[in-house]
Image (tube, rainbow, N blue to C red; front, side):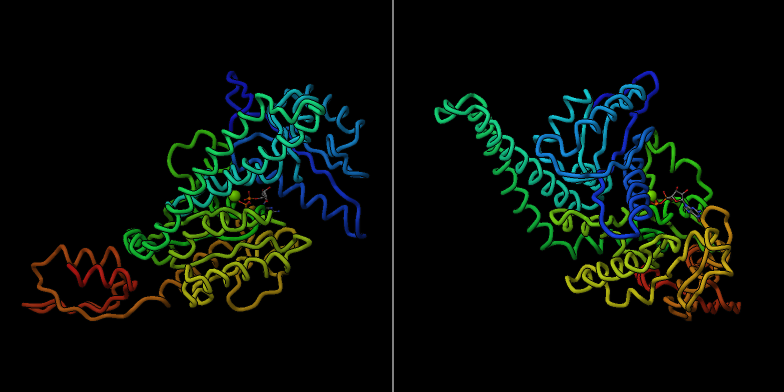
Amino acid sequence: MTGGTDPSAGVTRAAVILPWEKHGAEQPRAAEARLAEAVGLTASIGLVVVHTAILPLRARRPSTLLGDGQVEAQGRAIADERIDVVVVDAALTPVQQRNLERAWDCKVIDRTGLILDIFGERAVTREGTLQVELAHLEYQRSRLVRSWTHLERQRGGFGFLGGPGETQIEADRRLIDERLVRLKKDLEQVRRTRGLHRSARKRVPFPVIALVGYTNAGKSTLFNALTGAEVMAKDQLFATLDPTMRGLRLPSGRRVILSDTVGFISELPHELVEAFRATLEEVAEADVILHVRDIAHPETAAQRSDVMTVLGDMVTDGTLDPDWPDRTIEVLNKADLLGGVRDVPSRSGCVAVSAMTGEGLEALKAAIDVRIAAGMDVLDYDIPPADGARLAWLYEHGEVIERADEDSVVHMKVRLLPADRARFERR
Ligand SMILES: Nc1nc2c(ncn2[C@@H]2O[C@H](COP(=O)(O)OP(=O)(O)O)[C@@H](O)[C@H]2O)c(=O)[nH]1
Ligand SMILES: [Mg+2]
């Protein structure tokens, strides 16, 4: 994030404003849920949200989107709260964005801009980074063009001679176009060699558990509750290590790595779909997928099918193995809001929990253990007693089911992950 920061406090103070068009009877709750999502997204890039508002939209004013009275009232709150950045949870034209920045004397970003920031921070793979950069440049380019035509219109009669603004924007546009061409080439190249990269990355020493689900479903809360980490939610700004991966020991004693991913976002702007998919790549690498759901959300069923559809599409384009449902546990989170885990209707493959109260977490860990074991191979190895290193390796990475020691050989029966089996047999 750029924009005004308060160096003494070390935080960027943000407001989140949701322009809301009235439709449908259910709307107050839907608006609250949408605002909560936008607040969650804003907080996820380290901004501190100190002011929020839901503003009914009567007409979409071309100059500011919002009405004059709304702009003024928000301006007072923004000054009072010493706000550095305002997130407007809507699509703003470049003109609207600029006019609001002038009226409020602070940085203004719209929904697409915010989401691009989040993706930019969270893209891990080379392909993901390129994909996000591509979406970012296309966004910038569209802003350039539109603000240029606007300036031309303002300049009126003498615009046809081409002012300094025009040549500058032409030059910027050319630069962006060149960069776009290069990016697309790089992206093609990376895609062609994707298989190679993937097998190289497969060498993480422990099984990986990926959390997926909508923003605000409780992924980070669950991540913290399971790993006992306190840093995530509030201190993200100061975290130097990758805050999205952390180790965890399961009831069996097995160590795994938990990986928090970018959340699904309602009504994802069309031009960001590819970039979002790219951030989900780590899911394809995971040994177990935890699909975290907010079962108290008004649209919980629609959210679930969105997640299933996107994962299904990843199978179609070859990014995800078709067996992913076998490796997935549906986590029915926020059970406390429905009266506790016993009051949540459940099916097999689902575990009801409350990441907030901790209820159900032991059952969830046990379920993860079962999933991992189900994906393991049971193997027999004969190892010379002197080969302590290989024996130790099996204890460290596998589950020893039986051991029979003879003078010249140790018979071992162990459960190993397919990847570990390959690694062991290569030694
Ligand atoms: N009542 C309740 N709230 C929860 C629970 N888990 C998370 N939350 C809240 O839901 C909001 C979003 O949580 P967060 O972990 O940031 O969601 P993420 O976007 O999926 O990472 C926060 O305000 C959490 O405090 C839960 O089990 N019960
Ligand atoms: Mg989160």
